[in-house]
Length: 635
Image (cartoon, rainbow, N blue to C red; front, side, top):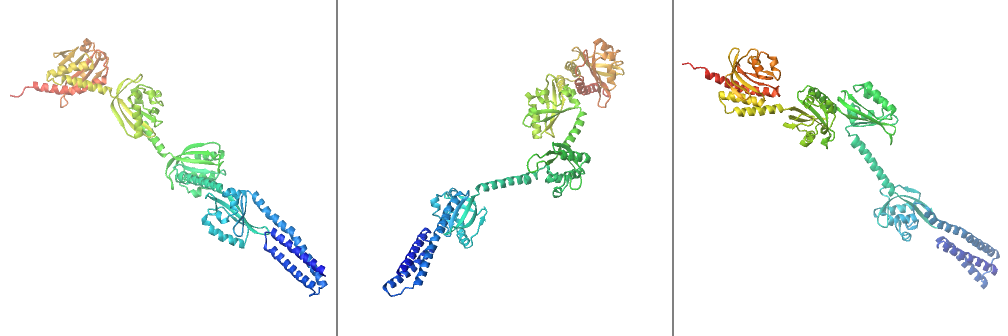
């Protein structure tokens, strides 16, 4: 019996030692310590029983000892069987770090006390801490300060009811790197039991790139929305976008204003229906509809035309320029974009220009209209209008002027600064004029010109001009003659007058005659070849002077002898030209005449006529005073 007691005690001691060994391998887990303690208590009881038997105080029970041996054997076998299970649990715990390390995201495993138990390489790179330093930290340490209290409260609640959970990336999900920089992350957590411990495994994904991409998308969407709302919708050009399904996608405010339509009702309308709707609002409905429908149907090329919108409900009469082209890329590829620009002002300006041109054709003044193609360069001035009077004055055919640059037509103007002056009129909208502009070149006869430059629409300048050479010549001649007779009185005045008239007008003869008797003239002063006489009388019959004394000016620039063959004085002088003006008193009664006669054709009849008219008035006044002096006074 003593042997059985010793065997039972030995088996229980072996089982207790094995339980302690397994407990050590399990990290001195309390469960194994309880098992080892229970076995040791049973072994102590067997030792006490053995001592009592050996001292003879207790009589052993064979059956009880056999049962005790069986229990001891079962305890040993049970503890021995738990060894492989414990080792499998330890192997499972060893696999956890390997699994975490293979994950692409940052992985952190923490125990129920918030202590970090495992981290992978991705977590080390994300957080910037050495691995050993992370394993000595709490999870709350890698949270920004403002989130730590909330994390601790949530962490304890999570362990009370653990479950898999995803925390999407938001403004509140950040981790704190060792360098103090916050990194936005997306976090998912799940519970993990390894047998000996309960862990929480968190997967952290850096969403910095995603945030930047989302910000870029938002910025792009903002620019697109700004383009639509701030630019296109407020554009003065009407815009209509038709999608690839041939339905209206969008129209802007200008489009609806031009046609008096509602934007919401227009969106979604089929392109053919839209063409029909718009056609009913314009001047040529059939032509408009056909061109628009054809453009939508073909959709391979740009289209453009002008249309006139008729006035009606919610719309004004206006001219529009339609431009349309296919959309080749983007969301609406295969669709079409229509643009309608308001050209009403341009059409009105063109109408005014046409009216202006019609007036200009009948003007006696010369007219040239230049367009400045480049506002920064006066060399781009180009002739766009030439009236008939300008052709005559310049002596250049219209075809050699129209469409050419100013330097090509009038090369000498550049040195005078005239192109810059015309360009300045266009830029400033001011008017410029001059009355003493001398110009001539290889084609244009040198003259003194007066011109006025004034602004016109479409970056253009109009220039009206005339030659004032004859006027300046007249002024010069009058000035010279007036200076010659200024101090002369009475008969001396007439002698000086005929002398200076002959010299100034380039003729051989000048005379002032008084009608004394019907049909006869007595010359007060008669100058021929520089000699002045006062004794010349001649009959009026058959002479040009006869017409003059009848009260009208008579001018024959050449061939005067052939017209008056009975005039012996003309024949004797070999006269070729004649110019005469009547002299009348204050009451309009004839006094006589003033005339010039030359042996060559009269070079400038208009100037000579102007000069003669001017001095005819002075001569008539002097002749009237001379007559009054001859009339005897009453006694």
